[in-house]
Amino acid sequence: SNPKASTTAPKPSSSNISGAKQPAMTKTTPECPICTNEYGGKVVPTLLMCCCRDVCFICVEKDRNSQIAQLEGNRKKISCILCRQKYHCSKDTPWRVNHLFIEYSGIDVDLTDVRETQAAMLGAALNNHRGGPRRSTAADANSSGDSDN
Image 1 (cartoon, rainbow, N blue to C red):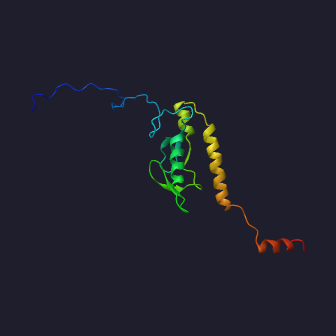
Image 2 (cartoon, rainbow, N blue to C red; image 1 turned 90 degrees about the vertical axis):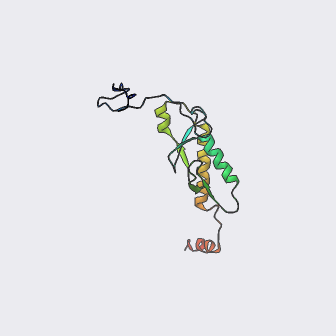
Image 3 (cartoon, rainbow, N blue to C red; image 1 turned 180 degrees about the vertical axis):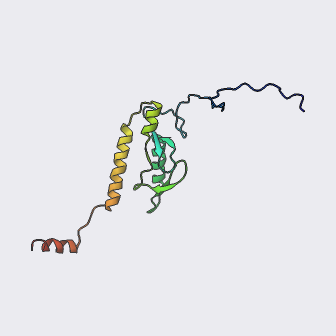
């Protein structure tokens, strides 16, 4: 037997009714894992679609734009800032505003810059989907003449 062993039972701390130990609740301020700025104002939490993690809008867009600027030739794949999952730079939407997180944490955010960026991303995706401006062909000219008959 160990002479230094305690003969009294340890005092329970933060127990529930069943006696199971509960983790201590600590209030943490939500912040971006990249820049460590607290969420709020223009520091808007976005949910990365590939790994379901939060990063502020500023960091995710700064990284996305940096990767797009480094693309060479007709390459269009860039990767997530955290998990490195590949996605198409203009057809895929890599993030969305995490409204649930904003509501749950009670922070106030300014979505002006986010909405402008989302509109630009949507415009780029629509142009890619359409394949750019359509050029008329000889077949188009022939079919337009046949439509009057």
